[in-house]
Image 1 (tube, rainbow over the protein chains, first blue to last red):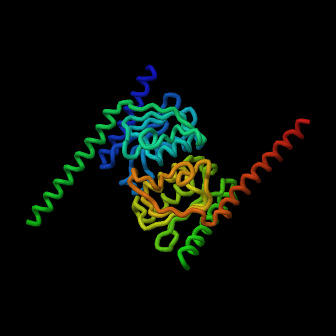
Image 2 (image 1 turned 135 degrees about the vertical axis):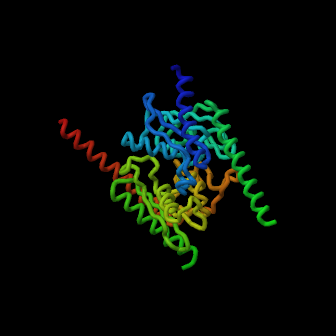
Image 3 (image 1 turned 90 degrees about the vertical axis):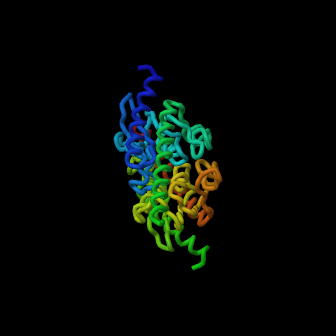
Length: 167
Length: 167
């Protein structure tokens, strides 16, 4: 498997994680952390389930990886995530010294890797990452588009039901 | 107690948290979260102890507060922290919708509230905070200065001992 296929392979696993989130009504975002071609952590967004503001996929995967290796330094690892990380998760990537990040779809509203900020490539900070974007981006983005479209439709149905009850 | 004295009072509690970190060899940074004049979460930096990259004082206090109130939204709360939050913790503050942040000393190397970035006041993001800085900043900063000076002295002593053993 060449480097291109490897990135697609691990992004597919991140997509599987994202689907687990979607299946329980969470915004479908997933992440895996890979070390020596082996997945050592996998997580998906759980904000509504946990009611904990910091339970984004990346942040939980980073914590799982730290626990696995017994160190806050995640050297020689790659983080794969379906959506461009937000400021919090980009900051967590810097804190854990992960050297490489691969993400799927851009997040023009809150992305802090390329869109609104370039936190992973700021020479003033004490760590920089290699970043690859756009791996299976259509599939990653489609998960979100579909999720939000279905959510809007459900809301419309609920509103229609409420209106009918009032009549 | 007027607003000025109230901020100093809660910052003193954050300083107490920071001292707990220093006492166990952690960089002395502390945070408390206050709701209706009551401390509902308190935490200090534990990165070395936990070997978990995300265990900064603010991030742990935010998680504790979410658990206490059973919600990822920390509305009507104030976070007090001895040092200007980093990108990760500033991002976590945005995620949890905390409306007000008070910090002690600036962090010119990694601060993301005023120094390197102004993450808490970016109209493009979906939340903005009221920020007050400089509350007991000398005391907050001195904790760090003293900690790092003592660390350098200890390292010097260890090096001298190693040199003596080689002779």
